[in-house]
Length: 492
Image (cartoon, rainbow, N blue to C red; front, side):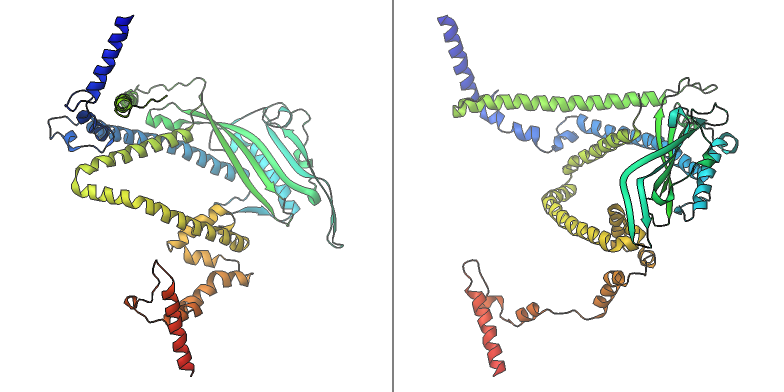
């Protein structure tokens, strides 16, 4: 027991002497001092081979940038096909189910006959879809009312009486829904099915009319990129909005697409290509190597931390205790590519001219952030002000997001005439707020306020000793008193 205790004491003293040694050995101060800067500092030119070392990490970073960027481009092309397929189908649905639809034109009706005509047109087009559509679509049963394929619903106030002649109304805010279910002619009628042409709308208390149904389609253009086609389910809703009760019913179509794997994919007569799989393996291997190098750096940092803890403990004598999400994939892949590209900037410090720019950016970054915060506050103030003042009179200012986009465009001088030409001229105050005030300010000379005029009367130079310094406020009194005396002399 005594031998064991003496051995531990001897080992502890040996480690302490080794850590506190002045010689360049393991655990000495001379050896530990430069290691933090070597581990955590900027990369050294020795990595470029000036000291006989191979720039393995730099080469790996450059290779990772290339292959990750290529992978991002390939994913972007695939994602573009997916988004284009959805947008083109949405445009096709609008032309198929919305009577008189025109691109970039708001759909609305103003008479009861027109509203009934739009409802009947949409239902008839749905029933005859296989005969009139250029695309291959399939009905989805069970998505509507009572297990039907299509639901025709109206939402209205439970009780509503409006008499504008007497300026009286009686409204029950509870909302009721009335629906009927319809099936295509090739299928059996839906339970409780009724003729949609006898569907009566309660206009005096109507909130909206909705037509809901689902369609299936297959995107076969992915075969061009050696990918298996995806199967889509489109949840379509046609909304006829009357909640404003202004005599104008707005009509719009909403399309929500979901992607799932096809049951029995079979692409015959197409050669198998493993180039994409091989490229994915290369990307995974390079990323794994980069991860291992990062892990090695972290491990070396942990070991260095342990050595420093042991060193300072003796030095200072202290003790211490089945569906692929393209959006999410795009966000992760885009962010990772951005970080990969930004991460290579640190290697530009090898060169003197680039290093000057990097040091300048590093020193100016806090001030740039402060400037951006101030600009953001002013920008948001203009956004809210423009939304409140111009929103009722201009379509580009109806929502905060549209206000922000339009304001950013106007700051750059784009779309100026079109924006002011589309302004509703029924409100003269809005024109005074947006245009006439700016025009008057530009035509007139610069106005000098009373405060600036008073300050300009003080002609003392900075070397006169009358300016305010950090030690007192007598200079302000002298300056003002001098101005006051001059004013009294002029009045006399």
